[in-house]
Length: 152
Image 1 (cartoon, rainbow, N blue to C red):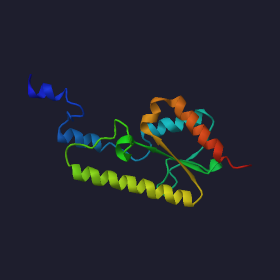
Image 2: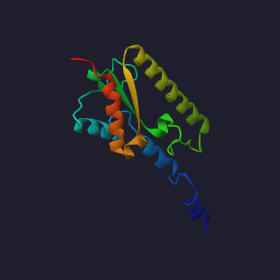
Image 3: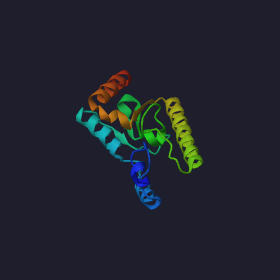
Image 4: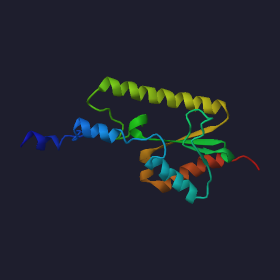
C-alpha cells in the first residue's frame, strides 16, 4: 500500500496542504455562521422573535431575546471544545498554539456567561452538533424559554 493511500485510512488526518488549510480557515466567520442561521431559522419558524449580536452585551450574543431575558450563543464544537463531541479534537500541528487558542475561547465563554447572568440574563448555549436533531433542539429551547418569559 502506498503511504498516501494508507494516510486516507487514518482517523482525523488532514488531507489538505498548509496553503489549502490556511485558505479554508480564513473563511471561518464569527457571526452569521451556518449553525447560527439554522438556529435562527428554527426559532423564527416556531414564532419567536429576537435581536442579533448586541454590542452592548458581553460577548455579543448570537441571539438576544429580551422578552425572555435570554441570550443564546451558538457554539462550534471545534472552536469552543464541546465535551464528548467528535468534533472536539486538537489539530496535530502547532499543538501549543491551538491549546492556547481553545483555552482563551473557553475562558471568554465563561467570563461572558458570568457577566450576562450578573446583568440578569439567562444564557443558553447551543452546540453545533445539536442541529443534527432540530426537533429535539427546539423542544429544549422552548422548555428553557418558557421558564424565562416575563409577564406582560
